Length: 313
Image 1 (cartoon, rainbow, N blue to C red):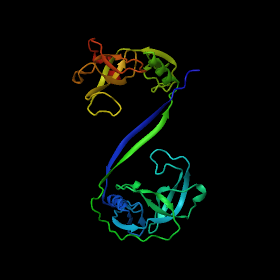
Image 2: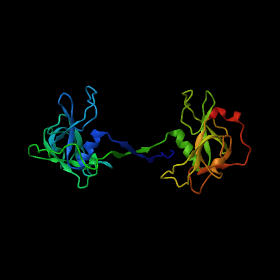
Image 3: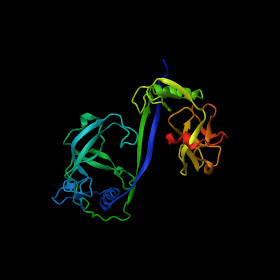
């Protein structure tokens, strides 16, 4: 039985956003150990605050301080915290209606186990030792037996207000290709490129998908293509990728391998970036032990005529 392939993959990027006056005051307040909400025209206090009333869509900006104590309205136990979550040990996700607020705030509750958590229990903010103006300035909530804390009486104006935040977005997952792509990857390990031919339209797709994207029919006939091909279109990359040890600028291109009816993408090397062109004939360059070509380089052949690859742009 062929090996079932799988690989851990990570998609990660920093998301940078600016803050309006309401969110700026809220996050700056957290840095100063103050929790602010916003009052709607009908008197409700929303925490966390928003710039527009969710019912009337009216703009709202009257900030109101609420207490750092509150009541759990609902909860769920998290037995296995993941990377980046508030606590490294098991904890409860809780919705907490802070004293003075009419809506609930989602955060973590530090509790010894699910039996120690209940709807209606009293909790209090545990502030982070170092605060920068982010929701993580609330390290978590902790059980609390007292009544409402008194607000500090601080207004909405803070020195050195937070005006923007950077939020890291990350997705960890394990990818396992199907039969067609597994065959494609195994062939690459032998320095061969294979696609699959549709039994209806007879087009050869590389990399194979297991089905024809045009006809919707399953594909099984394997066809070896290339190794040479033609640059159909390309772009010049001027931003260095963190995980790619290649100096910028460099060229990434769509390459129609000989015998294929779908262009794949790869890096072009062995030629100055400003000399890469449509129709350029290229071939793969392999490095020792690699499971796929490192890049493609010019073959020295005359450029392909536009008519031969125009349908693959």
